[in-house]
Amino acid sequence: MTQTQAQAQAQTPSETVPERKTTHFGFQSVAEELKQKKVAEVFSSVAQKYDVMNDLMSFGLHRLWKAFTIRLAGVREGDRVLDVAGGTADLSLAFARRVGSSGEVWLTDINHAMLARGRDRLLDKGFTLPVAQCDGEKLPFPDDYFDCVTVAFGLRNMTHKEVALAEMRRVLRLGGRLLVLEFSHIWAPLSPVYDLYSLKVLPWLGAKVAGDAESYRYLAESIRMHPGQQELKAMMESVGLGKVDYYNLSAGIVAVHRGYKV
Image 1 (cartoon, rainbow, N blue to C red):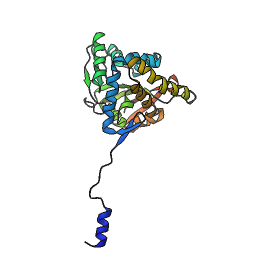
Image 2: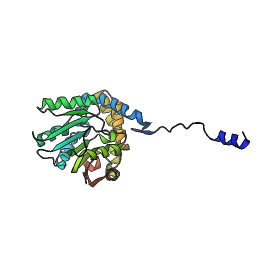
Image 3: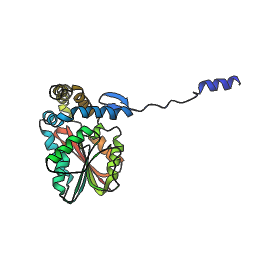
Image 4: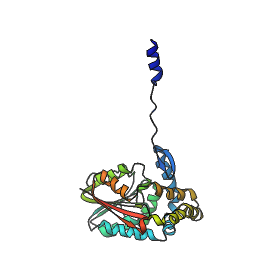
């Protein structure tokens, strides 16, 4: 071996170690494969107190936000609806009342504890709907099947948001609509007060009511890491959704995005 060959061999690694992909979990940076597990731990922990905490954290406003989303969805009798990350079934229950016996509403969630709470609530209200524990990034439904797909306060917890949005578009029929209700970027003058409340008060409230400050600290942090209104609009358009628009609610604390399969 010549000196030149030896130098070249020394400069070239014998094997390349693949770069580990990371993503955010609140303000932390974690390996992609760990995020789903950590999010599952959060929602398994908060499932029993989830509805109570929603009322306390939002002063009941989450009910108005969801009611607006339901009206905007325009679901009619006979429609097929998919509720992704539907949790305790607020939207599924409302949609079931609208589609009637000729329609179809699927409640899905990746978390078993949340899905069980939603299923039991539906049964208590007299609705026997199909439920499926599944990943929003790998929906087990055929192409072009649903008239409407919704995801409420679930997208920000997904590791690959573009993949999830593309999956939701895939299962929509032509002309069907996707609605995303999610925390967004608040009107700038209100940011200091909102930051104090969500980053300090919410974890304290979580500790007192749900016995879990850390899960609610994550939920508050995850809001800051989620795309803003225009960024999410562009993301939806990038996966092929058309006529995308959005509505700010409560000064931008949350936004409802709507897009169509065109």
